Structure formats: C-alpha cells, structure tokens
Image (cartoon, rainbow, N blue to C red; front, side):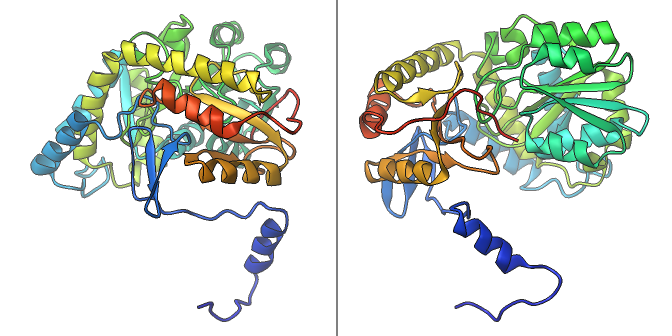
Length: 398
C-alpha cells in the first residue's frame, strides 16, 4: 500500500520519477546468502560474479569460528566509542598485526572504508592546503574533497604528467587508489611516490580492492609494484572484500595515528566495531598471508575469462585484477544483458550512471578464488557472442 503524497520543500517523488524515466532507478534485492561463488535469491541458486569476496573467505569455517569465539569472549557489540570503553585487546592485537603485515608503524581501525577515507581528509586538510585526486577516485574521497575548505584539483586518470603540472611544493596531499573499483586497473605507485617525494607533499593510497589480492602474502598494490611502504604516508584498506569480513583501517606513522585518535571525528564519535569482528579479521589475515596458491588460481581464472570474452567479441577494460568491466555503453543494454545472464543462472551487476559516466554502462564482473574453470566457462556461455557495439576506451567512474 502506498501512503499519501508527501508535500513540502523536498521533491522526492519527482527525483525518483526522473531516475526511473531514464532507466537509472535503483532497487534492492534481498538475497538468501552468498557462499563459495554462489548466490541464492528467491529460492534459486546463481553463479555469483558480482561480489568482492575475491579469495572466497567470507564463508570460511576458521573465520566463522574466530568470530564465534570472539562473541563468547567479548559479546556482540563494543558498547561505546573507542575513546570511552569500545577499544578492546582484540582491536589492539589486530592493529599490531596489520602494522607488521603492511610494514607501517601504526594502524587505526574504522567501521568502514567510506568513513576512514573521509576521516583522514577532514582531519588533515585546512584552507591553507591543496588536495590532488585522481578523477576516478572513490565517491567517499571525492565527496569529502569537495566539502573541505582546501582547494581540490583532480588530475586525469593515472596521468602523471598532468599531476606533475598541478603540484605545488609542500602544500598538501595526493590521493589515488591501488585498484580502481569500477575499472579494475591499478594506479602507477612508483611514479606517484616519486612525484610526492620530489614535491614534498604527502601521499595516500586507498587499497580497498588490492589488499589481500595483490603482492606477496597479499600485502596489496604497493607490495605488488615494489613500492616501499614508507614512501606512501597514508594507507587505507578494508576488510569486507578479499578478507571476507567487514571494517577498515588507516595505517602510517605513529604520529599520524595519534593525531587521528585526537582529531578524526569519524573515529572519536562513532561506536567502535565489535571486538568479535576484530577477532575474525585477525584470523582472516592469517589465512590471506598463506593464500599465494589461491591468488595464483585467481590469476588463472582472470586470464581464462579475459581470453574467452575477447574471443566472443566483448570489450573489456584494461584490468588484470578480479574486477573485469565488460563494457556495454547504454544503461538499458547493460540491464538487459544482466537480466539475460540471470535467466541462465548467472548473477553479474549492471553498473550505470551516476556511478559511471553516461555512455559507459557495463557489467562489473568480479572473479573469486572460490570459482572454478567450469564456472568461468558457464559465464562465457551465458554471455555468448557480442551482438552489439561496446563503448570505446576511457572507462571511468566518479
């Protein structure tokens, strides 16, 4: 039953109707669970190619056991903000584990990556500073950057020449991503670190989609590209993707972490993550560090999909990571393709504006070590030969 029309200063209905008219209205779909590269919706099982569970750890029995053991010891919630009584021994041990794993002095835990990114920018940047961001950075970074008193400049995606022209010495912060969430390509971190050092500016990486997937022991994009962690002043990563749990962290110098504990409002004024969740993440890190075989298998699946999709005539983004954008172009075509796959028992999300620019709608296909070769082949069979024209180069999101 629909209620009475809402009147007042906010034209909510008109905004929703406008989205619906151009095929961009979003609706949620309640699932009955996702495990091992599978998804169950409304009583039907699908192959799941739309999750960020890159190593298939979200249903790992050892992580679930650690979560349950944490609940038995600490309860289901933290009960307070970290500066009151919400900071437990489990949180402290996780921070120490992360710092050792990633080669930083100290780490601070956050409820989610969105909050962590915004907390850092808001705490550090004043009107006297400058902020440089890749145009394809995550919405959390771009949104906060646009709200700060400092001047924000965006440089063309991975365009180091453009960034070099914009930089001013000792003025602020350069921010880019390890793996870009809609395109799956990587930032050029050797060049970014060089420019930051030459200009005397700080450098921050959002490695939400690289952590656990790339580099020896899954240490992420910097390790994969041979960039020393000390050359990147701030590292942000999340636990809800390759690590299969939830939450996020910011790592760097001890001084940085002490500063954020005192000045990051998203940290100071939020109830902390449950201690049991920290127990689960600690176990996940143990598994991720030993998962080089799973990462190698994932790489083979990525190559199999790319070779097969290109042979069928589909256009893909320039990605060697589990995020494989299959470029379609128009929103309606992306929705129709996603629905066709569902009819074949394959779930892949259609990504449309405003998440990506107009004309660059795509299926964001994500692969997992939980998949097997037969799963990838079934996806390729469901896609079939490309019958339409895909978009050209230059995919991005913002």
